Image (cartoon, rainbow, N blue to C red; front, side, top):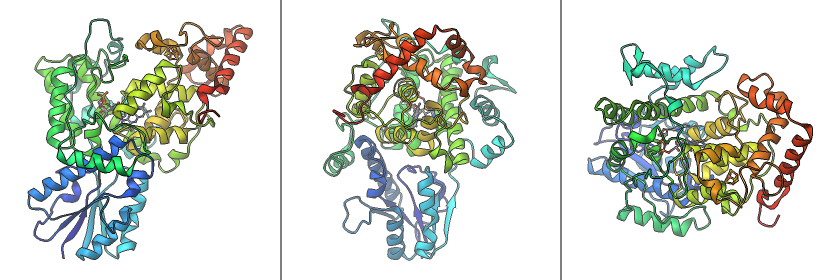
Length: 514
Ligand code: FAD
Ligand code: SF4
């Protein structure tokens, strides 16, 4: 008997640690499509298609290299529906001497893995997931003894450690961060190039039919599915970004525009998270474009910071702080998630645009997630657990290690400031400045009180007033708190009344008609 090597849906990488030292003559690779993983949250149907199709393509590619793959399909008779169940069945089928797997992306799955030894009676080796640029031990040591964790300092260490965008010991161009240049709205006449899409092949179409039949009540449309499902497609999509969108990625990174879901963003998160692309390859491709004079430094540094900085940082936080992190609710937010987050039926045009786009594409870019849905959830005091479940459900790139710190930490401040030094709270003025959504809205972005006023305005001041004491010592909240202190009490009362009326109204109802 050889080794049973277990590969999970987000581990479709040729160089995966669990596959190293594989002996094709003796070992078997188990890939199991299980119902439990498709339904522990009601994932967007495009996400289920993406993961299952990537698994099927990866299994086929391994088999073509002479590897014995035991691929258990979702609708196969006898499929137990759980990872543990399928590992136990495979252990009985193949009688291996031991089991090897790679560290998973979710706490829940790690717990499961830690039970495989007892369930099978075989030794289980969980190898490090070295597809990341920062290993978890390094992050833990970096975090130890620091009063506050801040992404910017972590990112500088990562630049030094990897040599990315460095000139000797100094950052390329003389500064670590060019974010100040990256705040333009999409001006008239700037037309983002349409991203190259990957149309579904026969394998993906078969999975689409399966998902259509088995998950009829999950959120999201399947039409228009065009995610890369193989490493080759992912590399082509990355190259398309580097050539056509990277040069203006920085300028328009924070912009939002009706009918332009992607703008100059990379669309690489699904491929990175499934392991079809490596983070280093993405960063190196961007750096090479800068060195060749094809893309400016503000764009390239901004893109590299997202991957080398934010992506690695949130993973470090997740594994440092779990499992308690998932239960944090520092701001005591308890309001149930409004139905409008699912239906998109709302008079708030910003919310409507983002929810509809999310339903159609399983994608929204960072500022849409942070400053529209995230900001509304923060200001309205929506229950972090419900908001977290929504983000896990609706995006094709949602895996808990990256989704949870972004939702709990960055958007909702539910972690009390572990991840980010201040809440990303903003009034309607921000959305009005960075998008064209307000032009098509039933509410007036310039008004703050009364039924016609943009709800974000009143909600913002209600939020600041509600948490004034908590944020009193936070220097990054000093400005709004000072404005609040100087505000005419009658005006504040009117703002809070407008906020209360909105929160009690139909827009925020958890179910239609409630
Ligand atoms: P680009 O804007 O082109 O950025 C390039 C890459 O940088 C991304 O693909 C991603 O890998 C990385 N990146 C950028 N920002 C972040 C970030 N804040 N954290 C981690 N990586 C980042 N990203 C996910 O991959 N999965 C999630 O479930 C997820 N949930 C989020 C929830 C909220 C509330 C917020 C505010 C952000 C979330 N993000 C998540 C981060 C970010 O929004 C997405 O990575 C990005 O929108 C993906 O699109 P893109 O590939 O076009 O990104
Ligand atoms: Fe959103 Fe307010 Fe603008 Fe309407 S006016 S789109 S609610 S920010």
